[in-house]
Image (cartoon, rainbow, N blue to C red; front, side, top):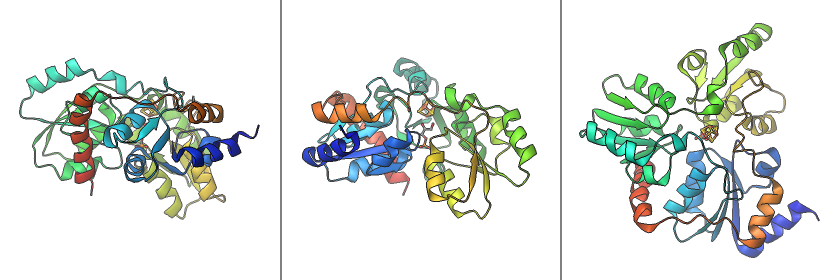
Length: 301
Ligand code: 13P
Ligand code: SF4
């Protein structure tokens, strides 16, 4: 059976759109109707006219799509494709932190559970965080769950007080300074592109810090030909497609998010055939989380 043709046929029959994050396997990115970062995919999922959204990414992404579009059927091809960082902030603990800082606004990275989003004033993504925080008048902010993104944002807003959660991404934490220095030693004229989920000492080595989408755009627009890409290596598939004459290097061998790589073409096919792995969210929680995500879209414009 030609899996790709079968998937394309099923997509028509079921009135479905396939969305893929930049960290997905190349063959998944290549069959998707839209490939993007978490901010853009959440917009496409909300604005698309299709009835069914097949979200090739991790669970919080598919849940965010369902929160914003309850009338759509949102399918996650592999149900246990989670984001360990999202699980690091637990609702009861967040409630405690809110009580400790009653004047603070709760700003939550989209990499979070629906329960935590429901306790949130506004969500952000790595590409929208700066704009959103600059549109917020509050002086005190609770930021969760990513300590690294939180620190990076806090550095740009020295007049605001940030209370940071202690979460992190297990994939971005693995990159070592020496891995970057090793490539820089061989390739002298190389640009270092870093995702803000990296630790401070890695961010300090960056020529550019940004979301997956912003990193790709930077390499598209820059005249240099050599880049060290300090984020999950899936982004290189798009970078190479768009810039075949440029070279992209991964620091070390460990920049792989295993959850993002769980989804295969077979999984996409099976979830469309059987319409299985539908995201279902309790309506009371969804409505609260909806406000936080809608605030993100309003404040990011
Ligand atoms: P982006 O918003 O940059 O796509 O990041 C999502 C993510 O999970 C990064 O690890
Ligand atoms: Fe979560 Fe990190 Fe994977 Fe992104 S790369 S989905 S933050 S574990």
